[in-house]
Image (cartoon, rainbow, N blue to C red; front, side):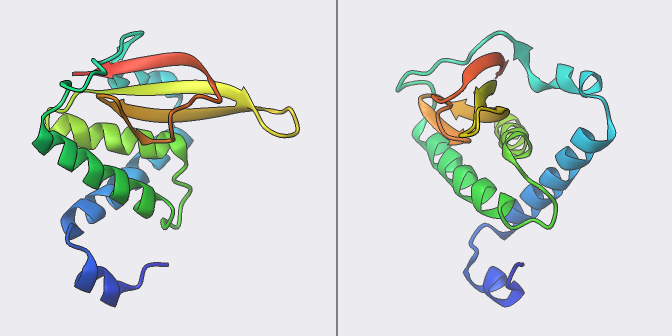
Length: 147
């Protein structure tokens, strides 16, 4: 669990971390409680990608992307509920939309070591993969652009 004393002493982005906790709880609730078709329309423009060049985002946006990358992945592994790849990807996507940073949410499928099918989600801003790695081990089945 979270060491509250160290959280307040060493975390320079306390409010972002608290926001991430609330967003991961919200998206986890949505995934468990509602059919996906009810909220999947809000994930972005289906079938499109945002630009992935060096000039896709500014330096200030890149710094924010790095902060979100660190905190979403760190906080996601410390929640009492399951904050797996799709929850983390949706959380990062929401944070980027609030700052008007274009991002792409990817959904993919692959196989684990036993040959069982598995699903995965990841996000990309510019040429940087923020959550879930680069998805190279998965076949992309859907992508959602957010401008």
